[in-house]
Picture 1 (spheres, helix red, strand yellow):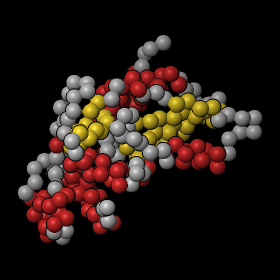
Picture 2 (cartoon, rainbow, N blue to C red; picture 1 turned 60 degrees about the vertical axis):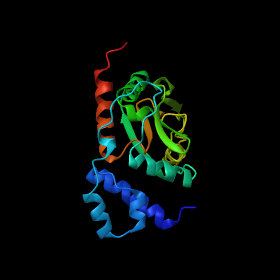
Picture 3 (tube, helix red, strand yellow; picture 1 turned 60 degrees about the horizontal axis):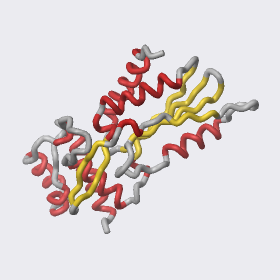
Picture 4 (cartoon, rainbow, N blue to C red; picture 1 turned 180 degrees about the vertical axis):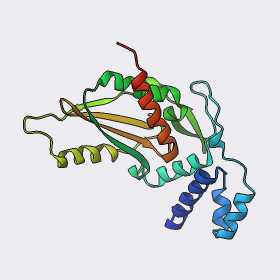
Length: 219
């Protein structure tokens, strides 16, 4: 079993890759877990593969980045803990076209390969494969009532959805829910697994989502 110190080491290695863009061997770091040893490993490491991923045919198995390997390990150790879900909640005011929003979200899956990535182990090796983007759908809920929706109900709605874990094997690492609070107020809840997104890439996704919605000319 993996102990607490090892889990901290995994998080540290992930942060090094995210900030510095270099791959550091978790195995090598655990052999000598000191700042000096980490500095030497960073100096002798090459750029992270996650920064130069080429598009591959549907169904083809690709090697994961070191960060994805570490997050997969954490996923298995923690039983798919929602701790590694990246969540975002948006309060939408005014008129909203739900079908248009669904197309805009689906456009993210079509444009960004990471958003349709799944993981598979074969012969003790981890690979990334592409999931059919048609699997994505926007879940729409109607929370409207004659007495209105209170804050506690909204908070519970969000908590329940962001706490759902991802399987990572046979489903998209991306979910979205739209809840109607009244005629002109909606709540958009987005959950993405950290294996395919971080704070920087989330900003790009949200920017693309806004563009997709605003540029949609479908009837």
